[in-house]
Image (cartoon, rainbow, N blue to C red; front, side, top):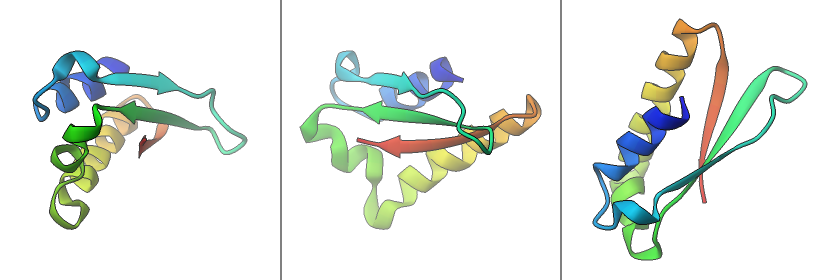
Length: 77
């Protein structure tokens, strides 16, 4: 899952070396939180107009997680 998020974000940004993902342990509801960190000048590319790209990233991650019977959440830091 972490590799999927890194590959999605790396394809969007100008500086793919700055893409980092940290993973929190699953919380009480079983949701694993992935924190996406990108370079400051690439934040607009990852979020998109009105958050459409960020929402699309979250949808893809949730779909991939559901295939593995997992629950995930993506936060862009």
